[in-house]
Image 1 (cartoon, one colour):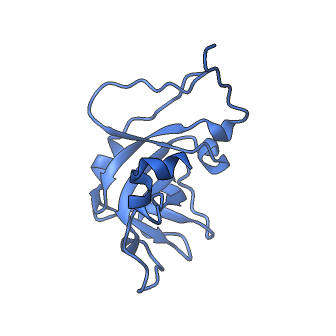
Image 2 (tube, helix red, strand yellow; image 1 turned 180 degrees about the vertical axis):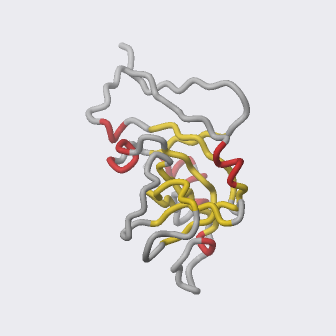
Image 3 (spheres, one colour; image 1 turned 120 degrees about the vertical axis):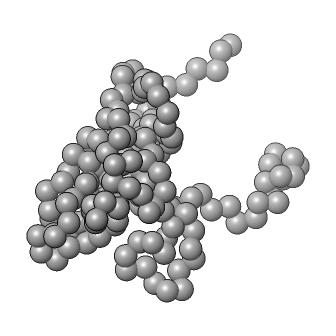
Length: 155
């Protein structure tokens, strides 16, 4: 028999989003990322040109984003991180369609032509490029050597 599988809900379907690059990043590179629209029933994304793409889980915050774009950063490049935090890579996902300032949100902002992550207590002095909806850390494997042993995987 064929191995048929049907996802039960939208969170099981990944969403493909474009990645603009690594911070520090020129605002023009961020603006050049194309708007993506997924075609049903499998969420296919078509594009032509050069670019980087990643699949993220279909969490509600990702599904609600109209124009999500990812930006790679280091954890210590983000505001309000503890000094003793592990400096690991993160994927900052913002929704470019949400550019209206809200005091309870972080944003990617244009600061002198460079893209920066920021929070603003009052109306921002910088041009907002999109509201940050998620910062995703990489999957953590406690013992990578453990997963390399075939007899360990089977159990």
